[in-house]
Length: 113
Image (cartoon, rainbow, N blue to C red; front, side, top):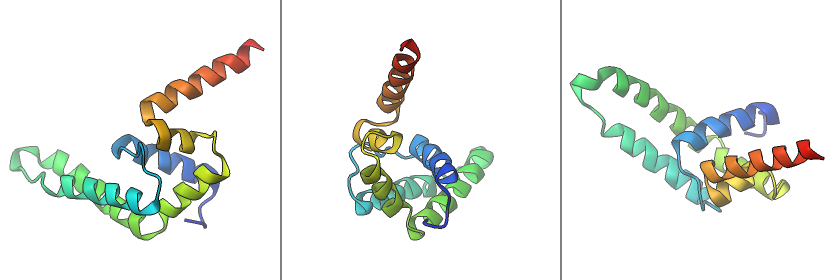
């Protein structure tokens, strides 16, 4: 993932963090385990009456599989270490919803000054 610019990586991370719960994941192995767990969940959704949902989720499964082998987890941890008060570190520590609240609170606080 070193080839990907920061702007694109942050967009990708935000999409993945909405799908995969990364709260408390502190190592690349843990992130990869959670990606694999989500892939396995998508694998079990084979109902004929939900074909469109299955197709969409099977695409997500393939994309998550690509991320596991391209160093996504290592880049996430490196970004969190490089910027311990940034968005990625907050999502790893508190989860997506709480991190969003913290970031919005920081933005409002900056606007007041």
